[in-house]
Length: 87
Image (tube, rainbow, N blue to C red; front, side, top):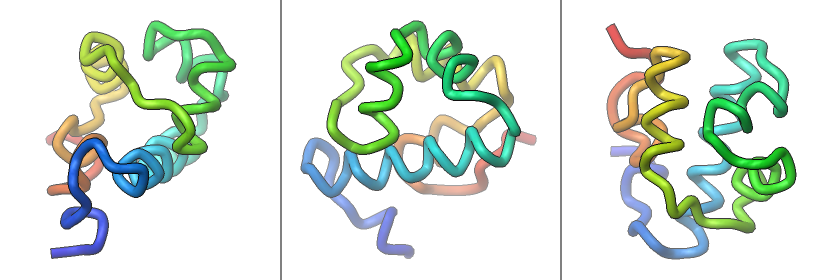
């Protein structure tokens, strides 16, 4: 089990780890922050705060929309479990 997998949901360290996974995913996919924000159904400013771990996403709808659009595993993005890309 990795450090990212052992972080408790709702803590500041969880949201920083989520932001790290979000940034790595976006960079790996080669998409801009603007495209990622649109996929998350949030403003660019809010999305940037997600990546920095300063804001907590309160919309599972946005996370699911992003994961579906870019074939990203929600388990990996939210919890750090499994592989980043869905099969």
